[in-house]
Image (cartoon, rainbow, N blue to C red; front, side, top):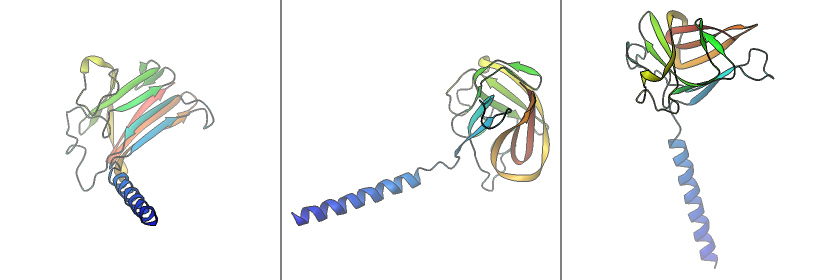
Length: 179
């Protein structure tokens, strides 16, 4: 009886160790992130949120390299970036109705075409369907003050005006918005 208890204890320890090792190995190298736009304050209902994964440079050239110029990019890693609008908004002067969209970009050295698409729950840009584009805007590229290792997005604004910032490496894209 005592031998069975020892055996079961050792077996349990082995299983726990194996499960922990699998969890550590399965951590995503491009972790999921969220940008929430709460222009009326932190305790209010958001106007928008973006769900995306944050790829890192890891010594590579990304914009114009791993993310080539002139090709559709998912604005992050893994599943396509999704934006949820909780009210009608304008991006770059163009109106976008409340709802859920995927976001893509076509980067170039001087500007990015940012695309809002109605085809949801897609992986990367593999399922990108231009016929489902709802809105696209051209946004100039700005040089960043500092180089960023990981791709990131953030909202800013209040009193009906704001911006959506996308930044990576030494590049920034700022999309003006109103709500």
